[in-house]
Length: 182
Image (cartoon, rainbow, N blue to C red; front, side, top):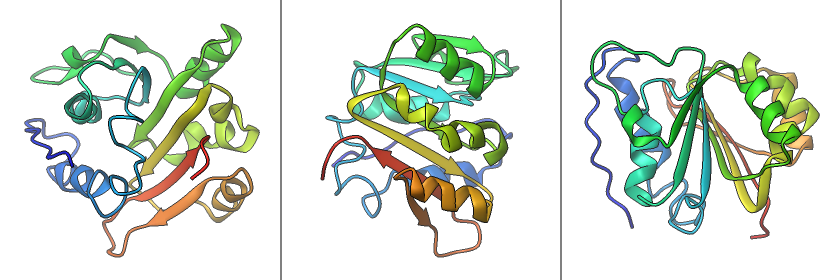
C-alpha cells in the first residue's frame, strides 16, 4: 500500500484538488484492484493536461523510475509547481499528442488525465485512439471534475471503459480502461 504525501501550494485549481486526488488514488478505488500499483505505474506514462504536475508528483511516489511526459496547452506557470518531476513537458492539446504518438508507432504504459473538461478528449474516446497508444498490460485513466455527457458515457462503455461515479456531489467522474485481463 502506498501513502501519498504531496503538498499542493498552488491556488489554481482549488485546494479541493488534493482531497479529490487522494480519493482517486485511495485504497477504495484503485490500489486493491492493482490498477495504480507499482506494476501499472511503470515505464512510459503520458499525463494529458498535466497543469502544474500534481498528478505526476503522486505517480512518482508510486514508482520513481517512470518516464513521465506531460502535455498541456500551458507549460509555463508562475510560482511553485511539480513539473520538474516530468521527463518532458510539451505544449499542445490531447488530440495532437495522441496523434503524434500513434503516427510514430509508440506506445505508453499509462495514459492519465485529471481535470480536463470532457470535450478535449471526447473524440479520442469515440474513435478509440486513446486506447491505440497503450501497450498491452497498459491502462487509461480519465478523471473529470464535471459529470460526463450521457452520450459520451454510453460510447465509452461500448469502447470497454468502466465508469466510476463518486457518491458525493463534488466527487470526480472516472473513466477507466485496462488492456489486461482481470
